[in-house]
Image (cartoon, rainbow over all chains, first blue to last red):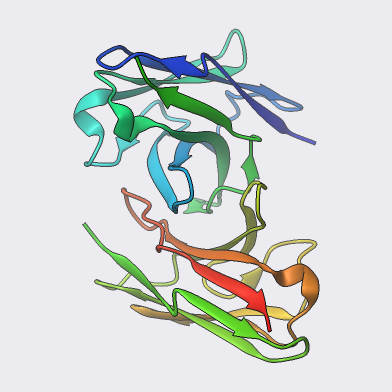
Length: 123
Length: 107
């Protein structure tokens, strides 16, 4: 059973960089049928898809965040990461990592999610 | 970007009622539509994908329909454990936008 676990600082100062890691257990991150997603949820609000990294290595980002976001994979550690630059209070949210699959070339939505981690942006 | 609009934003129904939630895409997305359930304080849980395919382990009282721009999530007989917020998500192309959510409560 695959499991995902987010980790990283819970408090980040404005203008700094938010960095989170998602550790994948129970399966290889490099298996060529998965993509790896970051999704966030502002307190009391809805879900916002940040972006993902395809098993091919291609990355796809939400245009609303694209200029500040980088998603990368470290296959040696079975982890993928999120960096958000120049954060403000508006980046305060619960951040989720999630996996989606591709079956016979057909993309499926995220089905395995981490528990989420709250990141607060504050001086 | 394609926008996803859910209605209603909240609803209150009695146990055993049939509940319907609608999701509309601003452009056609074929059947690349998923529904998630998020209970308070919990992680979103995938209920339906490809607009109408029930995820393994999800109770059969949940069903989905639609294609193109108009989609529906139906709970055939509302149960107390269905109290949650429900989200639709498109995943045909980036960005994989979510609807704003529909909160379901028991009357």
